[in-house]
Length: 69
Image (cartoon, rainbow, N blue to C red; front, top):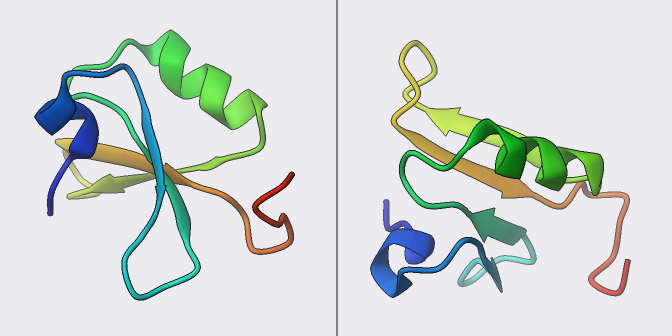
């Protein structure tokens, strides 16, 4: 899995995942909890892999929201 926020050195990279309609928001490795909380406050859903010891976190826009929202 590629983490675009790590690759580009940004706080958040928001993009449409290739070959899907999923809108993702990658955060850098070790991003502060406040950044994750902000993205969740904006309506994004947090995901982590592996789930037992999160090393890689990302957020997605819920299915019921469109790209404009």
